[in-house]
Amino acid sequence: MVISITTLDRAIARKLKPRAPTPAKRIELISALAKAGIPTPVLAAPVIPALNDS
Image (cartoon, rainbow, N blue to C red; front, side, top):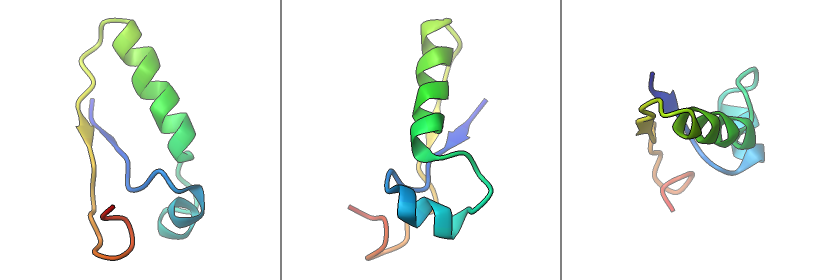
């Protein structure tokens, strides 16, 4: 399973993916999977210069 996190900024996330789970919910899922011993690679994409490249 790969979980994509476009940005940690909720406002930007809502504009880029309005119906997707919030960044906080994605982090919670990653944490829960990791605690359960499930490999949890994370994909930080897309990287958009000047928007989410910090």
